[in-house]
Amino acid sequence: MARKSTQTFTDDERAAMKEHAAEVRASASRRGSKADKAADDLKALLEKIEEMSEADRAMASRVHSLILESAPELAPKLWYGMPAYYKGTKSVCFFQPAQKFKTRYATLGFNEDAALDDGDLWPVAYALQELTPAVEKRIAALIKQAAG
Image 1 (cartoon, rainbow, N blue to C red):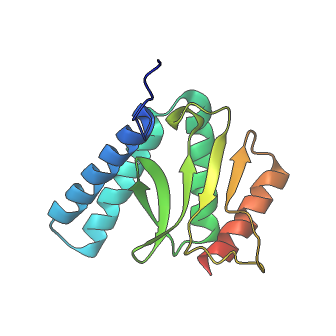
Image 2 (image 1 turned 180 degrees about the vertical axis):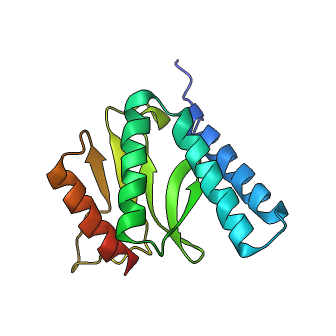
């Protein structure tokens, strides 16, 4: 009789949870002004983008720029080891590189605090394969809406 696996999370998911725990610990231990903490968060996010594969890095860099251009009030910060953008203490959106969970596309995702509600059904994640001008325009519009 085959043994049933009791593993609930994949190795990649467990790694992401460990990254998030480390992010929370690092944030809690930081001293200094709000501006210093924001600079540290931005630095960590940019370092994480630099660690990505070439294709993910190029896409993440452009998405990062689009988000900052479209909603400068959103603060860049890591979330489960991924670039994310916060309004206050709430994560509004994030970029998930394809390599993160070994998927065939990167993802632009939105969390529950994103102002995207549209009736009883609306998308909260978008697969990204190429950033054409039309896709960039759509991302900019979604980010502006999500930021409220």
